[in-house]
Amino acid sequence: MVIMRFMTPNRLFLTVAVLTSALGTLAFSGVASAAAPACNGSAKLCSRTLDKVVLPGSHNAMSSSSIGWGVPNHAIAVDKQLKRGIRAMLIDIHYGVPGSYDLGAGPVKYVQSTDASNPKRQLYLCHNKCELGSTPLVDGLKPIAAFLKSYPREVLVFVNEDYIAPADFAAAATKAGLLKYIYKGSPTRFPTLAKMISSGQRVVMTSQSKTAPVKWYFEGYKSTLRETPYSFASTGLLTDPAGLAESCRANRGPANGPLFLMNHWVTRSNGISYAEDSAIVNTKAAIVARANACKAARGKMPTILAVNNVELGDVVGAAKTLNGLG
Image (cartoon, rainbow, N blue to C red; front, top):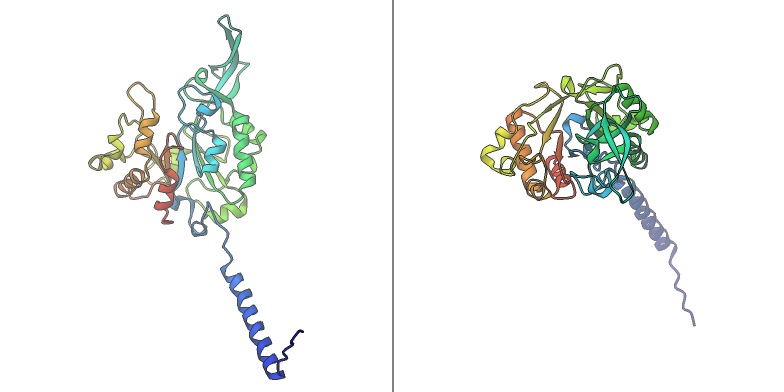
């Protein structure tokens, strides 16, 4: 037997009113608590101009053991670096020509460094010598364009050690599908991340060399970038509190450059960087301590924290802390 209980009209009206009020409250609460769109991972960064944001960076980003480079700076390639949280990349660009040699076990392909006078020259990402490792430039830029397409609320900065003609780099960026994402505004007054994202121009391209006549390609150390030294032969030079101020002294670029590059890696006297050194200097504590020392010494928080072996330590976490995000 089913027992049905009926409400009086007054109780029914009251119950409906309470339910309606509760549902309205929930609906309003849901709207109010909806997450605001993030910029580089946080809504708090959207209202900041680019020069007020700290970006985790990768030195010689293209140099990775995972793609067969000799004497690599990282164990993971550019696409995985981006997914890990790296938002600034230092890359080297050279001319090279494909070649091969045979020591009796069959031909081995490699790329030989060359200059602009060679009519067979092609464009490559290389570090010092293409013979040690290389990636065709367009192939190296395509994963960056793919990342930007998949992650439409991320802003990136590039610092290129560029040994090719600016027009050649512009052609490669266009072919790789990167041009539409490149920032084309002022090289000294940057918009907020939110404005860069809404405009679609989310990649700042700078070079250590001359960049004319490519207007969106900024000659970095002329007006956009200031930096620290980059020749550190031991970990203590980047971790000893007594020497941190000296490690932040002015190097290239104008004193008022809006973007501040903190070079934070060790290169031993033999010219090689070792992962064991990166493991020491890449800790969050070490990076945060040096960045704060650089802010005190130079009057500005670093914009880019450039490290080797981004897979070691926590440069991404250090940037988060320095951005005041935890």
